[in-house]
Length: 218
Image 1 (cartoon, rainbow, N blue to C red):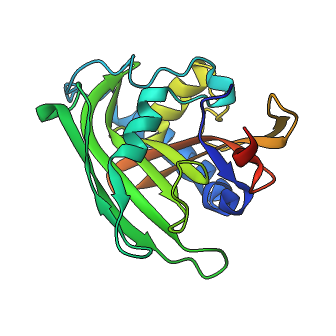
Image 2 (image 1 turned 120 degrees about the vertical axis):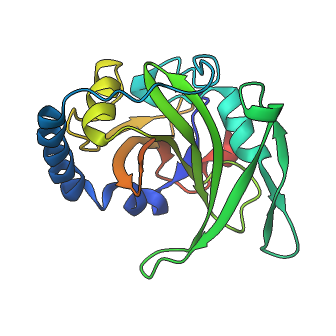
């Protein structure tokens, strides 16, 4: 069984709409990084190899621990309202994490809740500062979500590293969409995207069902 997030197709605009802009930003960052030379900021936090253990990077199979942490860092409150909750994570400071929640309205697609879980750690030589999940406010399961890793380094550093590791992302940060199917024959896609947001680089890597209800039959 695949252990990646099972996101529905309506979320695709979230991860592919900025493809051209991402590529241009990546090329600009490559040039800037070449001129500036290597970064000297020391990496912070513990090794995250176990937490972010993708058994098949090409299929965006998130580890069970990452999935449980993403879902366990918030809970449903009154109505459609969600509230932060604590979830154990041995690598995090204090041994637990809690999500920062935000509601993101989109004019051309359903609105989503956004949950950012903050922690510091090192993964494949990169500085991780947390994970993010975008999900429907009326869905009580992790399915129907887009998950991302949040890095401190720019796209020019993150993208080539992840491409070398086998993730389906261009060395310039250009996202990809690849048709596939689940083990039970449901049509799906492997969708990746990368963008710079403030002082963080977000890498989204997800297994996306074409049928929004397919995950219910897994």
